[in-house]
Amino acid sequence: MVRRTDWPGESGDSDLGPSEPPKRGRRGGGGRRRGSGEQDSGSPDPSRAGEGEPRAQGHPERESRREGRPEREADPAERARNICLRLLTGTPRTRQQLADALRKKEIPDEVAEEVLSRFEEVGLINDAAFADAWVESRHHGRGLARRALARELRTKGVDSATIDEAVGQLDSDQEEETARELVARKLRTTRGLDRDKRLRRLAGMLARKGYPEGMALRVVRQALEQEGEDVEELGFLGE
Image 1 (cartoon, rainbow, N blue to C red):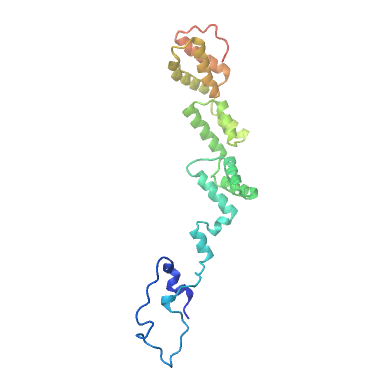
Image 2 (cartoon, rainbow, N blue to C red):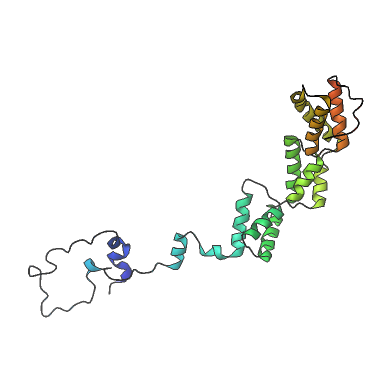
């Protein structure tokens, strides 16, 4: 008996264009007639296979792969691991950032907790290392002070103890030295403005980067004084 999956029509070719015309001799008077002693095998005519017959359904697993949705993706833990690995590729993330991403993907909280804890165990998540690298990069790259760095780390879900330890890498002397470098680079763009306006602009720039008001005022006054500005009357930061 011929299986349906062996039929030529199962390849789908019969649906893509007109059927091949029957060969001469298959039907009509010119063809070979079946003798009276011959029995019909009951097998379908290969040239007619697939015509008018429903197409066989593919294997569910193959169909799932064809659609790009493997069965294992239905497992929430597997989905959670894949999401975390994809987000961690090339970019460090905090545990809270990953937890937020899993929640948006509707991963159950208990599954997310288990996967994130496992990632911490193997070192793929390390909030302390993330905070240290963040402070190093943002202070030297953007000139941010401890207060601004702590604020950024809080928005990324880093806990207070880890933040304090990370920003503690910067002492007051290093912070002030960075503030002086920032003012020196910005100072020339304020030349031609009156003294008070220069003061507000330079001190405002430091304030936005998280420098304390007292430090900002002192650094700006010293920079203006070195340029010959009279700063004796300047005693406070104004807007």
